[in-house]
Length: 365
Ligand code: ADP
Ligand code: GN1
Ligand code: MG
Image 1 (spheres, rainbow, N blue to C red):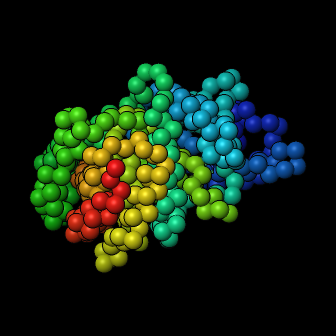
Image 2 (spheres, rainbow, N blue to C red; image 1 turned 120 degrees about the horizontal axis):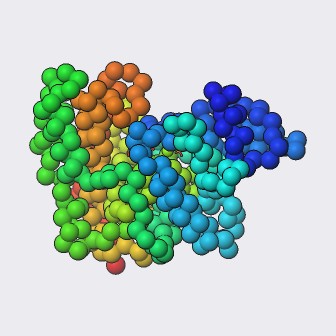
Image 3 (spheres, rainbow, N blue to C red; image 1 turned 135 degrees about the horizontal axis):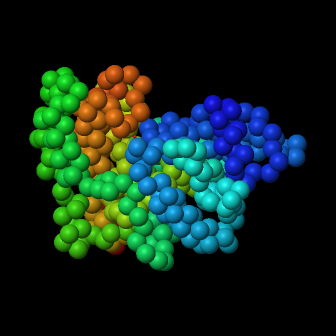
């Protein structure tokens, strides 16, 4: 791997360098991410190298066009802020001026590494909740006036929950991996709760909530928090930035923040909703978005966590039924364990929905 990354790195505009170390980095389910340390003029400098999963992202050139537009616009708006270099990721161009490098069938890109910052897989404090949510809210606000044509849909129907439900029913009927019998309770849960699927799209179709430019993969570990100040610095993992709903972003943040358990925790008694985390999530997101959201969007913030958690549980179940063709798995029932965990969280979020609705009343305009 070291040799491969070295070969790839040589294609990017990184000055005369000596590669000291390269290691897999992060724990994403889709792309392959590496952190490389180079010695540049006697100083250590770090870069991120990523191999884009082209099975999932079929048109990487369009995806990179989206990212470049989004970053250009964000950098422009952030220029006058203190520490602006660390508030946005920066693509390193290739030596021939492109934003990615094609290595046979593989598509690689590189980012400047943002130092003195980190991501969290499990949220620890209310302060982290506030700052992570604020960064995602700011991201929403930054892109609210992106000029030019509509962004490309890098994965069509990505958060179209009824379409995800149809994919699930197809997998359950066709049973391609012969696993349907081993997940009867999960299939039943998915069916019993299918009423959740169309709700946000119905509000969109009625014109009550708007389409926006959204991130669409706002897992807690897709925002860097500053090691010193604890503030939200920069939103990362921009592959799915495209037209969407603010509620997809807030919902995924709720999904990955309120529970003290990892997404694949198998001790389901640990899957809980910490309502004390919900309030700073809402406050942070709304502070960051600076008035972008309308009242209907604010009212639906508690429900958004339920919908997105249901949708991801459904996607894990579908992938399990299909024989693990999409998400990276570490063992045979990994996707099923993730589904059980997420469906448990859906249940717990539903039990707390009234409490979350009470909290939201404080924030309506
Ligand atoms: P994945 O698709 O694998 O989730 P990410 O883009 O989220 O890929 O990157 C994986 C991890 O690498 C992140 O969780 C973060 O810790 C780190 N990371 C990514 N980009 C940067 C960057 N520009 N600077 C510092 N760390 C980064
Ligand atoms: C994937 O790439 P990563 O790990 O940040 C997935 C998300 C899911 C998430 C579940 C492109 O995100 O939609 O919510 O796993 N990304 C894609 O953990 O499908
Ligand atoms: Mg990520």
